[in-house]
Structures are given as C-alpha cells and as structure tokens.
Image (cartoon, rainbow, N blue to C red):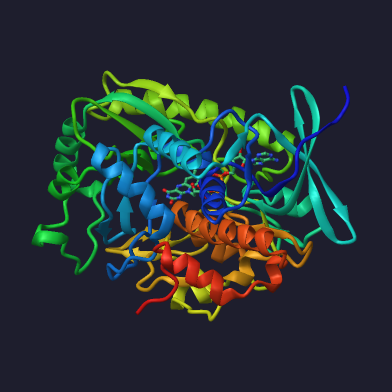
Length: 472
Ligand SMILES: Cc1cc2nc3c(=O)[nH]c(=O)nc-3n(C[C@H](O)[C@H](O)[C@H](O)COP(=O)(O)OP(=O)(O)OC[C@H]3O[C@@H](n4cnc5c(N)ncnc54)[C@H](O)[C@@H]3O)c2cc1C
C-alpha cells in the first residue's frame, strides 16, 4: 500500500481528548487552517467516561478556569446537561456534565471554527528536518498518510509526538519510574439515587464531614446537601472496607466513588470510579492489555457487589465502559519549565502565565496501599489536597526543549510527577489546550516559532477570550 501525501495544514493537533479539541477550536478561532487527528472514532478522550470536573473554583471559591472551557459549559447548562460550579469542601469545587452531550457540543464548536477532523488515524511517526517538524505520519486502514504542517500540538496525553520527535521527557516518579494506577471508569443505569441517599442517612459512618465548612445558603454539609445538589459524588468506603476485611468481596479499591448526573429525573445513569491496577506503564502495549483485561474483571466484581449490597442498585444495569482503560499518568515532557508541587501548593504566579489550575493535588497510591500525599479529615485519610489558591501555568511548560515548532497541552505538559497530579484535571487540560492552540495558530500565521512568540500578545488574546491568567 502506498503512502498518501495529504495537503499541508497550518496547525495539526494530535489527540482528540478535551485538551486537543479545545486546542483545535482555539487554533481555528485564531484563523489557522487546522486539522484534529484522533486514533478512535470519537473525540472527548477520558472525559467521555463521565467524571466530575474538579477545580473550576479554587478552595476559596474564586474561579480559576474560564475561556473556551467555560464557553462549553455555558452551552451545556441551558440544555440541563451540566451543572454550575459547586463549591465543595473536599474537592474545592465540583462541576458535572453529561459526557455524551459534551462530546456533541465539542463537535459543534469544532465545526463552527472550521476545524477539520481526521478520525481513526494513529500517530505512527514524525517528519523531522534540521530540528524542525515538517509534519506527522499517521497509520490508517487505508495505509500510511503524511500530513505536512507548520506547527504541531501534541495532546495525546502520552506525549507521543514529543517522544517521536526526540523531545526530552520523564515517565513516572523519579526514583523508580512508577506511575499512578490505571482505572476503568464505567457507567450503570437504572440506579435509584433516592434509595442510596436513604441508605447513607442510615449509615452516617460513610460520610466524611469536613471541619468548619458551611455549604452555600447555609445548609449543613450532609446527605441532604448531596441529595439536593445534582452532580455531587457519593463515596462508599466503610461498607467496601468491611466487605474486604470479611473477604466477602474481592474489591480492587477501598472506596467506590459514584458520580451522579447533572440532572435529577427518574432512575439515574451514574459513572463509577472503583477499579484499579498498579504498576502499569501505559505506553507498553502488553501492560496496557493486561490493564484492560484486569479492569474488565474488576468492573463485574464491583457491579455484583453494588447490586447485592447497596440499596438503589438492585435493578441497575451495566451501561458500558469507555473506549479504553483510564490512564492517569505516562510521559510528561521536560520542557522549558517544569511545574512543581511547590508551585501548585503555593498558588504560584508566572510572568508568562497562559492558564491556571485549581484541581486538587491528587496522587493516588502509586504502589498498592501507599498514599503519597494526603490530608486528614476528621481522622480519615483523604488523598486529595484542595488548593486554597489557584496556580498559574507558564507558557514555558507547554514548550518542549525541541523541536521548535511543537507545543504540548493536556496531561503531558512539563510538570513533575507530583504537579501533574493536579495539572491532569480535565478543566486544567482544557485551559492548557486553549493556550497551546492559540499559540500554535499565532506561530503558524506569523511564521514566528512558538518559542519566540511575543507572550504578551498571546496573553492578551487569551484574556480577550475569557481565559484567567492572574488573580486580580
Ligand atoms: C480513572 C481516572 C479518573 C479521573 N478522574 C478525574 C476527575 O474526577 N476529574 C477530573 O477533572 N479529571 C479526572 N481525571 C483526569 C482527566 O480525565 C484526564 O487527565 C484528562 O481528561 C486528560 O485529557 P487529555 O485531553 O490531556 O488526554 P485524553 O483525554 O487522554 O486524550 C488524549 C487523546 O489522544 C488520543 N491519542 C492518544 N495517542 C494517540 C496517537 N498516537 N494517535 C492519535 N491519537 C492519539 C486518545 O485517543 C485521546 O482521545 C481522571 C483520569 C482517570 C484516568
């Protein structure tokens, strides 16, 4: 089969998760002829699993992310397909969206900005000449295709383009290369939430009560608050640990998180975060295959447990599992600046800020039964550290050391193992996508390499589109 040469584009964005979709929308909006390339038949990436968007607000209720991410939610809210941002003592803030509607809305926005899509195309290689990317090579059912491009944005989550192009990267924590565990989020339908809330009222030990926090409108933080607030997450822990201790269920994780939908009407569809496999390098296909198969088994175990033990799940059905196991961490580029845990925790500002993040620092147990970072809430260990103040992400964290015409956004930006545990949050990924897509288009249109762009011009453009770069 011969290789097909496609027409040259100004910006090619590789990876159609939310970082990539937003980057492509931003590049299209900035006037660049843009192509979004994705290996699967749909866009949305990990967000299609249906988790909550944490950290739109910081711990003190200030908004950290707006821009295109907010535009997306502003379109979903009137359709009853997303909640507003809800201050939450355990997670900073919670926002929920219907993942199917979100995907469709992203497609609409891509079309409005005249972004072309190439689906079912897997990045196979890059074309490099004298240190510059000339384009990318994708593998398709119809054989290899070459896509020449002026600027490339890597939003593969795994920094696939950067790694192929010889950009320095890290994988896992520095001491042993171990990454956060992988988990398969799955969805169940015909769930009766009212029965689960009634169960929680009878089992207050399931409830983490944060100290000194009063929810909006002065209500008491408790089951009533959760029940009245669509989009909030139900966490089961005592019942799970009791079953584990008694050996009555082989549950993979000591907590089951149940993401409730953004609306309340009849029996609910929920997403569940309850599976986990440690020690997986998700850039290795054999390990990734093992993770897929193990988490499939775990899904059935959790499904059976919930149906048998938790009121509200008696008539529940398994609706589906996403296109692949959820990967929290793989390669992170070592770019012009590496965001650190200290930057995240102190709410750092940078003169070249192009995005902000307030997703909690959220490092799961890298090895089984270890917690790397945690806080105590009423004697219980929480792995999330809520950020009182959002932090800025410098433009330099989106710039690999080489090649010169590559930008990175999403969960593979230049950040340490600890810092990426916050910057990988869905809305932070959209914020870095917005910045990278705008910068890529500016670079392609002016012929100035991304590294030499006038950052103030970029910042001005992002601000005009509602992005939050500094806290006034
Ligand atoms: C189990 C789990 C739970 C999580 N919970 C939350 C949560 O509650 N709240 C929250 O805010 N965040 C959560 N996250 C984090 C968040 O969902 C992700 O980090 C974020 O969505 C990543 O976005 P992204 O666009 O950078 O990457 P992805 O969504 O992974 O998108 C990358 C895209 O690139 C495509 N791609 C990859 N390689 C190639 C290639 N070689 N060629 C072509 N296409 C390619 C992929 O198919 C995918 O569509 C969770 C993550 C996991 C795994």
